[in-house]
Length: 383
Image: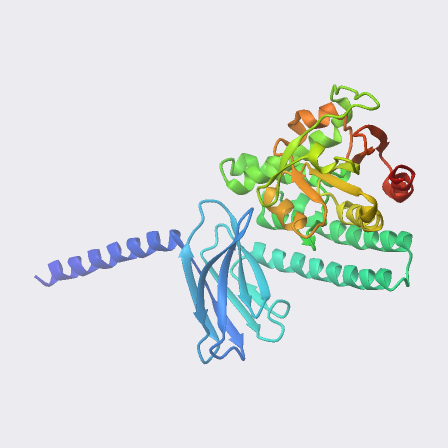
């Protein structure tokens, strides 16, 4: 009798253990302590390839402790803790349990993370990104106050970004299948990707991670986004080999494309009786912010005299493009076919940025490859 009871108890313990084991495999747990975090609200968010999703929030206990439990992702994914607009990034791969210790003042920088070597690497990369951003902000301030020239600004900014990339490459090439490799690629400052997918050298890093993730996680949305970005950027860089129709000097190809709010704009309507710049660009390019600064100067100077811009984006990430385009004053549209579109073939666009100036009669009067002289170009046709 006692033996039967003992066997039943043993069997029950075994079954319970199996159940708990299976349950743990289907979930991950993030717990920890936040010093001086008494009853503050902390949030857990999922950072997908296209947006940030709020998963849960809890009020920190009096001792600053917290616990989150969520379903495990089918493939490696990225998450973050948010407290008072400060962020701690981490990844969930094969790890079920993470412990994070921090404080409320330096939440995003003065923290430790246990249970995931990859998340420790991500902390290092986030720190490098923050250092780069601080330098970027300093350079912006110096440039706006005219304490450094545009050439000095570009030189110092490029050196700053180069320093980040040299550090980040160790994580990328040592294990391109890792979450830290993916994280390193997509660090940005004000929407500016530090690794430029349209740069020949940086493209190799994108290719290494894209190809490896495609082997391991071919059906993951994150992988598909990365592969699409890499292949489209590669095609743009190879665009010189595309058999494109050379446009006649005065003929242009009319297009009708959607803006960030879904409204459709026709090129011929925007340019009617105006001097118009048709501008081909991808906001994901490193030079995009400075490029748009040149456009902004010309636009504000000659708008009252009838100058307009019809900017066609070849970005593959529509969400990224929308966030960047929403604050620009000119007409911003996107070509959903990107490099595969007939539009760039019609216009014989072999690299970006490339522009075309149309006079008030709707005739193409100049192809623009070097935008440094854009204001002078517009001045010659605005009369």
